[in-house]
Amino acid sequence: MLNRRKFSALAALGAASIALPAAWGQAKPEKTKIAISVGGKAAFYYLPLTIAEQLGYFKAEGLDVEISDFAGGARALQAVVGGSADVCAGAYEHTINLQSKNQFYQAFVLAGRAPQIAVGVSTKNMSGYSGIADLRGKKIGVSAPGSSTNMVANLVLSRGGLKASDVSFIGVGVSAGALTALRSGQIDAISNTDPVMTMLEQKGDVKIISDTRTLKGTHEVFGGPMPAACLYASAEFVQKNPNTCQALANAMVHGLKWLQTAGPGDIIKTVPDNYLLGDRALYLASFDKVRESIAVDGMLPADGPKTALAAIASFDTSVKSDKIDLGKTFTNDFARRAKDKYKA
Image (cartoon, rainbow, N blue to C red; front, side, top):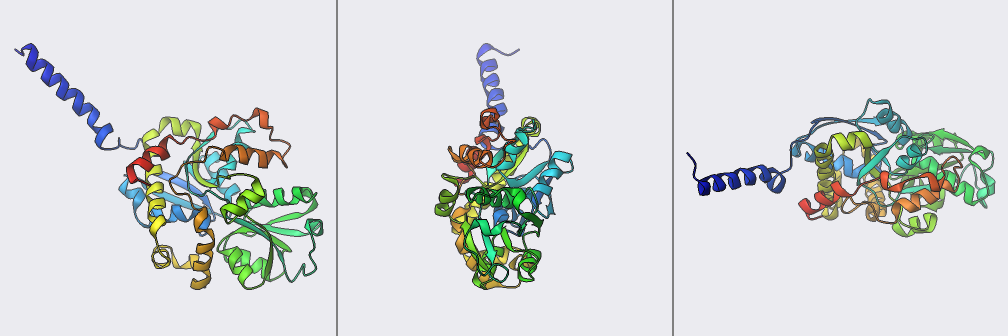
């Protein structure tokens, strides 16, 4: 028979063992096999995702991640909304657009703190370009219609007095197809990410008219911090799978931490060869250009969601600012814990 002191000691030991997993190790993911959709994985926009995958950080968190690559963010979004993917690696602003349609999705770790998107006009097709009005009736290449590259183009057009309906948007992807479309004259202008835009710029194929590849450029275009690439999922998925979301956030923040000190040679060794688009030097020049726009610790900046909402509402009349609950579009809880774990 246990005396009271012995019983108390055993009870305390039992309580401590229950608390141990939370204190010393993360609880097991509810769902270990995860499907992630992404639109244009070869772009620097998604470099942290590629790093986490290539360096085995998802596996280290107990996850078996399958990444499906689509032509652009809008297609990747369709996969997660349609149920063929659990999580989307895509632009934060999609969570706002979805909420305006009464679909609640939540970003839970940030990969990019600037959109890394530049808009340029073809020096061949539009050699006499003098202003936004010249784009009326022209063909503009975007990664995919409805993607963040399309959103930035819409914003640039609206600031110049044009509507989206004044131009034709054509999906060209974010790699070799985008280069070909511009250089062959199929499109007159392009809104895209790096390394594509730096390659076109350095070869003199485009004249850049708007640039969010730096924090300064982003502030000039959006008027504040603009959260970009992130992992987001339905609010229901996040609620039902908190340990899985934590594992995903941990892997991504681990990747961000690695990127803080990675040199050009480390990047070249880690990314697949086809991401280099046949030009290693230009790929690395592109990386230097966008490096500061990669998130540091996975946390969304406090003012970022407001900036994104103001930008979208300025040209999309279906998004009403007063109807959007920004608090439901993101959470920093998972990234905060991941940041503490990896000292990011």
